[in-house]
Image 1: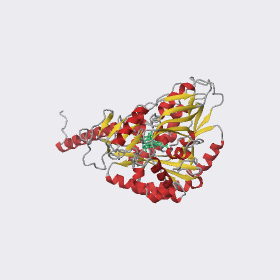
Image 2: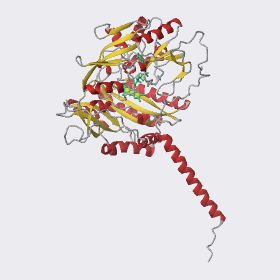
Image 3: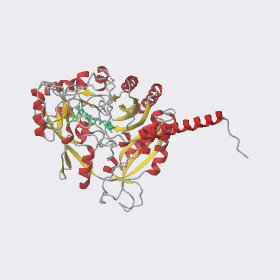
Image 4: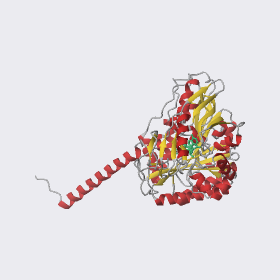
Length: 529
Ligand SMILES: Cc1cc2nc3c(=O)[nH]c(=O)nc-3n(C[C@H](O)[C@H](O)[C@H](O)COP(=O)(O)OP(=O)(O)OC[C@H]3O[C@@H](n4cnc5c(N)ncnc54)[C@H](O)[C@@H]3O)c2cc1C
């Protein structure tokens, strides 16, 4: 018996449904690919439309030197939102080449801006029409085991410092949480990381060599021109170029990584108790970026000294493997809701079970410990997870420093502000910093730092929303007796800056004394001096 044919309308609907599913699946696959792909190059977004970015053939009115590695064109920073048209980029490999570049800038009255990894986010490492000094080729590293110090070229990245120290059983006293940043760039913002005993970098610097605008080099330390020494650290490149830093090292100890989940209301007490244990050497807390209210839970990570490990050999430093699924998870959180819930739940509950530690049980220590890691390995991270290719989003960092008893109220206010502005927090964390005798000291006492890593839409509206949120959080931080970090977007006013950094006028006056022609320039100076 012949099968009954289905009506034409039914077959059409069926075909349409199959077609729609195919479209959805192929859209999902292409989204997943974009959301999980590691970006090979820094992003360059042109939100602040430049009329026409000058190309290499645009005449400067004088002959270009052969040593420029980029003629005209633009540079950008890690936010991708600060595309800036420049005269060109020089990449000196030693002090003689730097002297030549500075002489050329003086002769042709060009402004100069030093730059490292260009991970600042407010145009601090560029200036329109300037000669940009890309310092990354000045990266020589010399270890002096007798004095326990390492001399590092200003353009060296922290990764290179860890790699150089590793064979000597040594590690850094402090560094930021991402190892691709340059030593000169991070000293110029006084960066800090997860060594809560060290706090920021200022206390880890024995001396600095600074090249001034006239090409002369001065050696600075707490005894030789301490005023300038304490201005250059956290000085945003406004006094000269850090050509070398002498940093104090520490032994590359073996630590055991532990994590515990706590209510944010209990965080200060928990951090104090953990800090009181001498064995705990590294510590930070990641806050819940999902749920309601936001930020009300924390995962506290500690790295504690592992007894009896002093003489054990350290395995080679290992590059974290790139993980497209992890990047996909991370990026899905940009769409809030289930994506954010999934990311936080996996980080809190699944990651501890999957985590591979840098030193395996068999490889070292002969102990029944599954999760041991050397200090340098714990810091050896390029956070490649964050490097994405999604065209419509970029990532913006904020950081606030608040007195200890203000932490919980400040986090509540921050959670409310994030919710109200519908901002998407991809990551939020708390660390510990201490006062330093530098001019632009953000801590000014025992402080918690609150770091927010936010997703932003690449558009004029995205910029406006981020500016509004930043101003709200700056206000809250100041009201809590706190301050804000300066390498990020400059949505604060001159008054905000003066409240947060009471020595700012002294800082600018000292800049004018040491750089009378204002050769070194960036928008921290022009917007606020
Ligand atoms: C993903 C990410 C993670 C981060 N993590 C941390 C963290 O854990 N802790 C933290 O404190 N900060 C952190 N930061 C902020 C970071 O420390 C600053 O943005 C820092 O300036 C980056 O160093 P850089 O080499 O990219 O400097 P750049 O952005 O290139 O330069 C920053 C400033 O330093 C000046 N400068 C650069 N090199 C020199 C030099 N040799 N001599 C004199 N001046 C110089 C520049 O003119 C500019 O004013 C992070 C930023 C990003 C994007």
